[in-house]
Amino acid sequence: MRKVNISRISEEEQADNLIILKEFYHAFSSGILSSIGNYMHDDGLYFGKWNKGRALGYLHQLIHKGSSLTEHEYIYFNLGFSNDNIVGEPVIEIRFIPKFPWDDDRYIKADFGDPVNSEYKETVYQFSVTFKDLKIFSLRHPKKTITSIKHFIECN
Figure 1 (cartoon, rainbow, N blue to C red):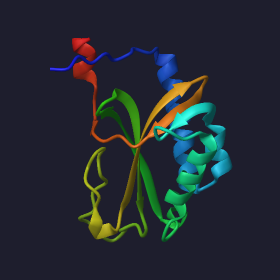
Figure 2 (figure 1 turned 120 degrees about the vertical axis):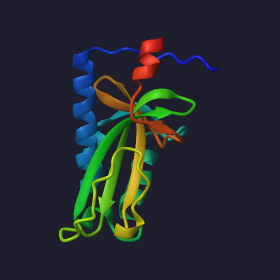
Figure 3 (figure 1 turned 135 degrees about the vertical axis):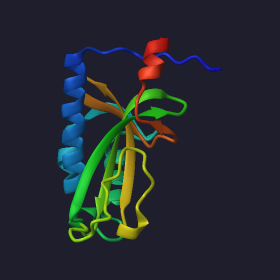
Figure 4 (figure 1 turned 90 degrees about the vertical axis):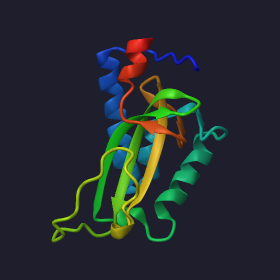
């Protein structure tokens, strides 16, 4: 069994990080790269190998490939944690649905980690993040995620 160390951060730092994640969500869902860049650290490492400029280009491709995600009617986010080679990083999951199913009583908003709802042509991106100086310092796509790290914190 591998040992996992989860760093404890203050409630104030958690609140600051949540604000940064929400701002990233709004910038990403609007497709305004300059806004996204405002929340990224200039010296960060993104997607394992890229600087901020290259990462912004990649994010632009995600947003505008095929039909632009900025034109989708229903967009929301969920929060969770990574559970891959880097356990416990905050993860923001952003979900896009082209047309909101207003008249479909069967529609249920997905929870963190739920599969893509192909019936509604949903697009989902998950980004694992770290923070430094009140900015996103790293960004990546986690391979595995979980909704809570409570178990790890209790065992730490």
